[in-house]
Image (cartoon, rainbow, N blue to C red; front, side, top):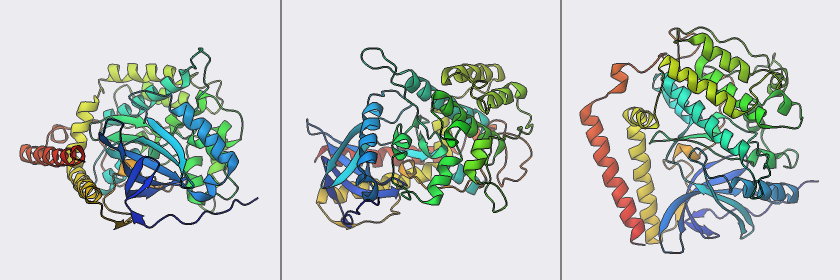
Amino acid sequence: MTASVAPPEPSLLPRTIGRYTLFDKIGRGGMADIFLAQAQTDIGVSRLVVVKQVLPHLADSREFSELLIMEAKLAARLDHANIVQVHDLGRADGFLYIAMQYVEGFDLNDLLRRCSRTKTALPVQYALLVVIEALRALDYAHRKTSDDGAPLGIVHRDVSPSNLLISFEGEVKLCDFGIAHANDAAPNGAYSEDVIKGKAGYMSPEQASGHPLDGRADVFAVGIVLWELLSGRRLYKTAPELPSLLDQARAAQVPDLVSRGLPLEEKLFAIVKRALAPNRIQRYANAQAMLVDLEHYVAESKLIASPLRFGEWLIDRFGEDLIHQRRERERAVHRLDAGAQAEVVAEMGPPPSARRPFVPSDAPLAAAAGNDAGSVDVPFAHFATAAERSSSRAWKFFAGVALVVIGGAIAYSMAMR
């Protein structure tokens, strides 16, 4: 039965939903329109949040809404440095919405696109850092218990580059816990083919086959992310002559990784192979087991990285983008303070960390390792060279001063509200 479609949303910003003032539309995903919003706390302090306003045809589905609310309540219990915090979920003016932590930076998809576009190799130690931090998030969530000590049985179900957010401080945060489970209750035809492809590309065989899931499904998804970062391409390809992505996910035929001359490479490849075992009995039993092996590998191979160094690397290469984002955000906050109405502009310089664009499954990635570029269009790097680790002091000084000035202006503007 087809759900009724609610009237279209207002075309002007700012507007209020619940206790949040939406002032910048920063994207649309398969499930929701995504806005940057300002929240007023009980003590009069303003803060920026991301609000996902669920699309009307999904919000009208009782089954979807009930499951989403249940999953959001579970996600709101998760309090971890590597998980995007869910602040609120509610209904207002006929809309169902989720408010969550704002992460200023990129999602992994967007970061890889930028690396590819600028011919920048993502150093392998930072690729490993992203995966390690994702595993920390999953380990915490999988082991989370209720107040009486009973396991909550949380499974993410959609670990993919678009759900791995990377801040300009080098922090890695996993978002959208429980969203994929709610999607199981979505009406038929609710999602476009591109959205379905994006999900199937990171499914474990058991998930693609519709079997009950546990944390090992998330381990498989992380294994795909790591395989793709090391190989520089998507695991599953799309072409008219090939099986569908869902069929490929069911078969889980994973090619061996090609040697890139990494230190202790056979150990790293063995970790990837175990994470991607089609039979989950042969897979890592949980995220913690994979995390331990990967941490041992980076220690032995001396490919250790810190969020601080990762953040410096991001600023060196993409600091201009950050300055642009913050200037646009400052203008939007000023417009909000002035009470001005502004027409929604989909591409106003949004923070990419809140976007959810689809990347075709066979699109090249910015590879993280190796000497031979093969089929990808970016240079490879075992680890950052001296030139990559340090850039112009003048640029760093300029970027630092600009960010401090812009950040201070925003903070002052919000504090004076």
